[in-house]
Amino acid sequence: MTDLPKIFLTAEWRYLAMLNFAIEPEVLQPFVPAGTELDFWQGRTYVSVVGFLFLDTKVLGIPIPLHRNFEEVNLRFYVRHKGPEGWRRGVAFIKEIVPRFAITAVARWVYNENYVTHAMRHRIDREGLSLRENGKVRYEWKVQGRWNQMEVTTAGGPESMIPGSEAEFIAEHYWGYAAQKDGGCVEYRVEHPPWKVWRVADQTFDCDVETLYGQRFAPYLRKGPTSVFLAEGSEIIVRKGVRIEN
Image (tube, rainbow, N blue to C red; front, side, top):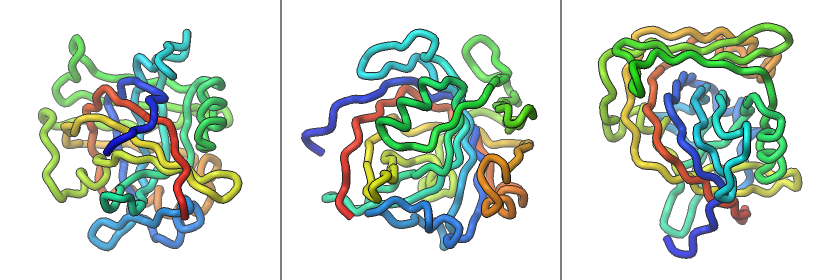
């Protein structure tokens, strides 16, 4: 691919806890950005609650004081768009939670992404720079005075994803799509190497779904996830968005 858009953001995404829920496509259809369509895996559509660490963040190459390291928890789903080289598999977001108002403002302004700001905290069982064996990873966010949380307990060590697996379908996306206020869509490229993942022995998801995401998502997010895993993450690049044709 030639003439890539300029780099907008660089960072590290680390310890991505992914809770994945099967959902009826009719629930997601109103959120599908123009020029994209829902992406299916073995006949099913999914949403994922993803918690992770944003580290060493730079916007246009500039580190912003007090905004380099923070948590994010998002609810996302999976779409695809036909590019010149074929199908581009990507993600679109229902809502993204961060702990800093400035991050929310920039994301809304640049991409029209639905960011919101809540108090957040995390706990990661580490030995030095590595996750402890059978360690826990927890992300928490405070909504209307109550702490919500997601937590995973790993089993074994990180392993490469199996080609064609559900984990690969969930984790391996290199495009993002954001619906615009005028009905259009912006596409942005995300670059990172393939990630290894940990299997998860136990998980907790305690969230006021109706308040945060709306009643339509409650029946699915309350059923419990169809799969859970933890991705190790890596350094990432997000390129500037480009408007796509419908």
